[in-house]
Length: 398
Image (cartoon, rainbow, N blue to C red):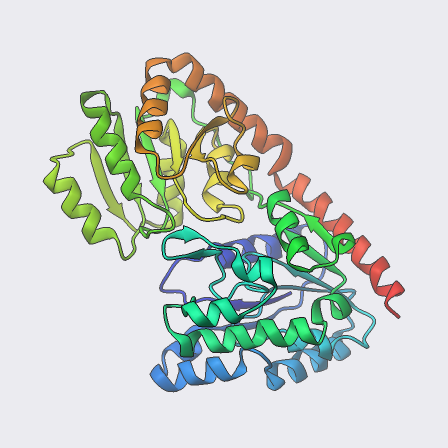
């Protein structure tokens, strides 16, 4: 298993997903060998670390040689890669190309084709680089951190590996998190026959709290930033007025100060910003809630918090956008609303809270969704089938 851990100072769904999948494979009886890098190793070095990260993003010779040596000595059946940015790089796939192991890549985001990683620019969904199969728009608009110099290494990596055919020649199976994401990456150029769907799963045996024992509360869990659009919830709660249920918001981010000022300005006593909480504390609060809100305005892959909500039997109210329309069945295990539509969110909340029987029924269906699709057992079977397909594809690649 191969993974570049993002900085540990900021929670990362990719890091959590990698660790959960690693532990699942061990429980399935597989021998797991890890090849890991950590972004903190360059962040601690300031500008020099940033420079090093930029240089090695397209092609890291050291990582390529290191994983080749490890694969030759351990002879794995599968090399499963999660994240190569910034310290591993796609060069590893070429270093493994002539070895008998099958190569699998999980796409947690759209970084193979989008320098920003998330198809969004200036607060709006943007798929220009995917549609045109070009990195010129990313450079023109400085899509990564609003900086051309920071965007250039990512754009160079995308253009290089598209040009030399890394994804078509060296990867035997791609894993996407939803059918929506699968269709988008195929449109971007990945070979359709090698792209599979495997959603996130919730490890262990989560205990569902009886409906009558839960708090009469809605919950937001995520980064307080524009792409997650927590601000629209304050607008919706303002429209609800006295009809508004309690709303707890868990997370931190660049918009926290703005949200705090808005809550104070509008005297919104039923809305609380709880900041960043531990994973275990967050899970406890999800389990006790009656509704999870996901008002994102960008193409989410598969928000980890949705699998958590379903695992505890909590219905989800989400934006009618991208993969969220696939994960949340409107009127079944949750409701959908138009992105940025505070009035629709307010109306959905009012309707659900005025019809507690409907909300409880959705909670039951949310739990059923988890039991059907997001358990360890279900996910393990999907993963084993993908590995078998990758091994078959590797034989055809000889």
